Image (cartoon, rainbow, N blue to C red; front, side):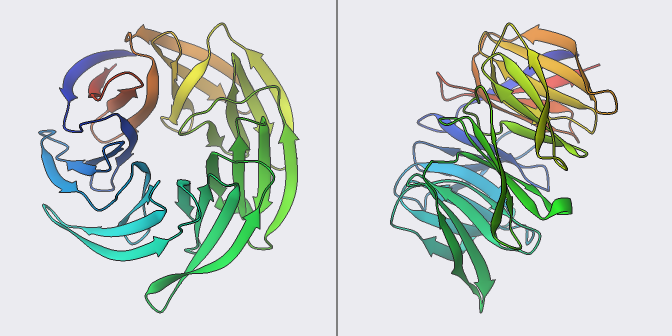
Length: 298
């Protein structure tokens, strides 16, 4: 794996909080400056600027309808219909109790979001509006969520308490809490490969069996993962705390993880995304407001 810097994008006034690659391959970013920007994937010039939130935007998600949902510390989830160079607000969920950290849409079209006051909220879409369906009041705060629709599960992680929670979203029951040595705080600290999960702790990589809800292997490293992304069904890319991008191969049949290549990019990365169509890696770091785009070379 070799990379070549294509460009650095600087449109936001403050740090980027989340990167989303849309289904049409456009790039969408949110920021501490309360805005959302959508870029042309060929020119990297901004197509749309959305200024609809009154506090910083923490997370972005593209729904099955292709609409974009944004979570904000202003206590709202907003849904936008996106056209080529325009947008329209089509729905708003007001949740004024606290900030919304992260969200997903389940296969049954329920929206699940995590809040700063330790709630896991389920909303359903009825009569053109989203309505509260179910709320779980937890004793700890969860900061990452992943759907495993084959098993009707969501997996939640808490880096402050080093817990991974398996929850059945049909029965609305907790299946298992898995206690680990440590967990990193990241926009994506859990990856799914077949019936296994890859999770990341401080200088640790965990392999977890989904069917058994069991930790089956812990791998020690001399670096700590700051962000991760699944590249394909056998490989994943991580950014680490010392400025390296690292490509790993995961052989789930033999439970073997092998580092294939590492490249020094200097930045301590906050988030990374992989665009399969353009074979590019998008990197955001903690210290500046640039979005860096690299071409992934063979």
